[in-house]
Image (cartoon, rainbow, N blue to C red; front, side, top):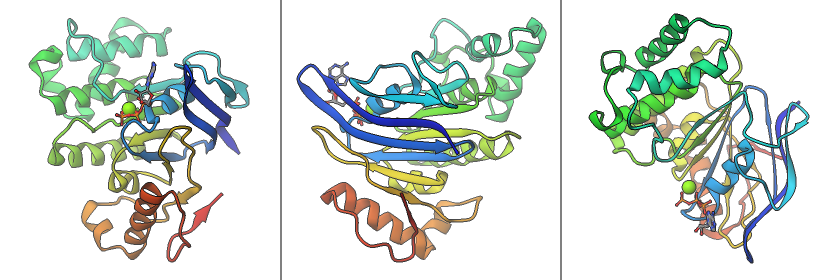
Length: 265
Ligand SMILES: Nc1ncnc2c1ncn2[C@@H]1O[C@H](COP(=O)(O)OP(=O)(O)OP(=O)(O)O)[C@@H](O)[C@H]1O
Ligand SMILES: [Mg+2]
């Protein structure tokens, strides 16, 4: 059953059509990625899906209810860290914990924030401000902040896009581990410009075509066991086939016949 549903979404900025006829539905606990070229409308799409922006046409629902503003039980990791620069890492995470658990004491809020900073390896940097942290560390704080509120749904907009390849690979594994360890279904919609990253983390992948009026490809389900590693995906026939088909869609807009990889509606 669908948990998050986007129906016939279109978005224009002024006369310029960005997204057209977007249909997407995520089951509870499903991790879905959208890959697309720069400026194809990915951030616009995730803003609409999370309720941060209204579509020009169409509707978004969560659990069958229409979305009219930012989804309260959602967590968000933005493209560019978006931490408050005058607060420490701990205070930045705590800020998301407080409204999520209003019945808790201040001590419990702090303990929850510290737990998630520890989980992303930043326990000892908790009192540093964003300016005192590296890019990778800042993005870890953003991820800790999103998970510490224990959201039912996570929106990730190119969470690792600004990082070097090694840090990116480490954080991809940390994100997969956090999802596995959450102890509850975490529904996630991730935007990425990396086909490899999408295959590593997702249950299903859609490609967003080029604009104007970009549309989504059919879903490509990723039937690979977890945990997955980058090395394993290089050797897996299914992963290689999927990579080719996604790359083909991104360059030509055409979907080729599946060989080893199942395509879903
Ligand atoms: N608020 C806005 N007003 C007008 N045009 C906008 C606005 N936001 C985005 N755009 C334009 O819409 C297009 C899609 O932008 P969007 O940020 O959704 O793309 P993206 O796929 O996330 O790009 P990137 O990969 O660079 O992050 C771009 O051409 C951008 O200039
Ligand atoms: Mg973007």
